[in-house]
Structure formats: C-alpha cells, structure tokens
Amino acid sequence: MKQVLVTGGAGFVGSHLTEALLARGDRVTVVDDESTGNAKNLAAALPNERLTYVQGSVGDKQIVRELTANVDEVYHLAAAVGVALIARAPMETIERNIYPTELILSCLRERIQRGETVKCFLASTSEVYGKNPKETWAEEDDLVFGSTTRARWSYGASKAIDEFMGLASHREYGLPVVIGRFFNVVGPRQTGAYGMVLPRFVEAALAGKPLIVHDDGQQTRCFAHVDDVVRAVVTLMETQSAVGRVFNIGSDQPVSILELAQHVIELSASNSTIAYQTYADAYDEDFEDIRRRVPDLTRLRSTIGHVPDHDLDSIIRKVIEFHRHRVS
Image 1: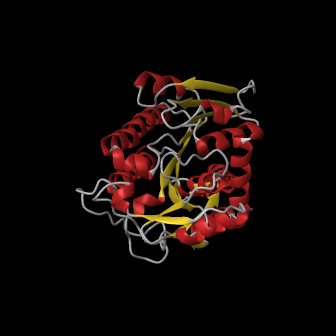
Image 2 (image 1 turned 90 degrees about the horizontal axis):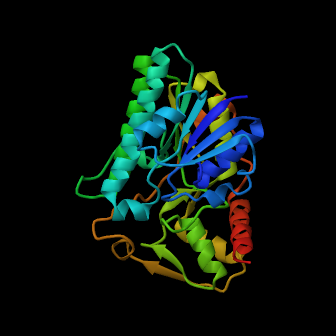
C-alpha cells in the first residue's frame, strides 16, 4: 500500500485523482486550503478510512515538512486557478505557484539526500508555451511569453519556474520527477467561477441565458475529460521511463470556442443564444490571449500508449448531466 500526498486534492482535478489513487488501494493524504477547491468535491471519498484530509496551505513550511516526511509519492496540483484569477490577482498567482513548489521540492530533496525513496508529479500547464506560433506544441518547443506589462503571462512564467525547479531537482539530486502539462481539462465538479469555459457555457445554457463568447470565438482549444487525464498521470508515475521528463496531457482534437458554444446549446436542447464580449470587458485592457492551443501528444502515446476514452460530445454530455443533477 503506497502512502501518497495530493496537494490541491479538494480541487477539480485533485479530487478525481484522489479517488483514482484510493481505488488503486493507496493510503492518501489530501491537503487543500480551499481557496479554489472545496471539500465537497471529496464527499464520496471522505468516508474511506485510507483518506486523511488536511485543511491547510502548502505555503506553510511546517505543514509541508510534516506531510512529505513519510510518503512514497507526492502529486503536487495545488496552484492558482483560472484566467479570471490570473487577470485579477497576478501577485497571488506568482506566489501561490512558485513558493509552495520550492518548499515541497526542498523537503523531498532532503529525503533523497538521506537515502530515502520518494517520487513526485508536478502539474504544469499549456500556459508555459505562452504564444508560441506553432500549429501544435511539443514538449521541447520554445516558451514564448509576452511583455511583463501584461499580467496574463505571469501564470505561464511562474509555472515554467516550477518546471525548471523540478527538472533541476532531478538532475542535481536524483529526485524522481514527472511533469505533466495539462491542456484544458474538463468534466464533472469543474466550476466556471474562475473563467473555465465549458462549465460556464453549460450553466448558462441550462439557465436559458446567453452563452458569453470572448472576442470573435475563433480561438482554438482541445478539451480532455478529467478521467482520461488522471489515468495518464497515474500511468506516467508508474512508468520508469517517464522520470525526469515533461509530458503534454490532454486531447489533440481542436474545436473553436464558438463551435463549443454551439455544441453545448445543441446537446443541452437549450434555447440560449450566443453573445460576444471583448477581452477588455471580460478581464482588463491589457489582456492578451492565444489563438490556437493544440498539443503534440506523440511523447505521451509512445511512453504509455495513452488513448482517451472520451470524445468531445461525450464530455459535454457528462458535464451537462452533472450540472443538471446539481441544480435538481
């Protein structure tokens, strides 16, 4: 039975990962400050005697030291969440992304230096690619950020620092680290409160309200179901050849945001219309977006043979079902 720590385990992805690790037979400790997560996301898992829930911050050195002392694996998912938060609070974004990662890696390196064994998964993001103009993004591609006067890039830059620290910990200290760059993970329990587009569209469609599309709606994204993403994460951590490497994790089937809105209206049988909003009105005057975000998944497939179980329509239907049940 593995002893596992999940930071941000009361969040959207973290709660699904926690359930998967419990299903594997692990003993899991979750730590979450509930700033964007919610213990209700773990309602089905909390009665499990192999789950320990700690409400606390991974910015607290004592908490991190205690929780990392005896675990076999750490899944570090705690981070600032969502475009809306990034635009509103860039300082908070930078601090919440960098300092906790530094603390966790420091504690794990100390264990490695004592001859102990521990493994770490660092959750990163497609945001690290910035505005790289390539049609698809591969893990060795350059990171292309905009000006520091545009707060939007603080998120990707801070997560890139996390990656640098993780890879340096592997190279210099031998800490087994796996890094996953998530591309638009969606599914049940995700909230639209921080700008996540699919739950925001579904909530509007079910309420008969207009679906708000930013700019012209021609931005291209790829949406992956959280269960497929969690399965990839767990499999990567079980695969020795994944150690010390970075992996794109998500779907590579692109869809425009306007097409996504149309799909949601159709599959929910909604009478909602589509309305457009400028980035300046949605966020702020200096907000800058990426027109196309599509991952190259060659490395993920060649390493673990990953094949997703969900296509876009099935994902949308599951999200609609979840929100209908929540409302009822």
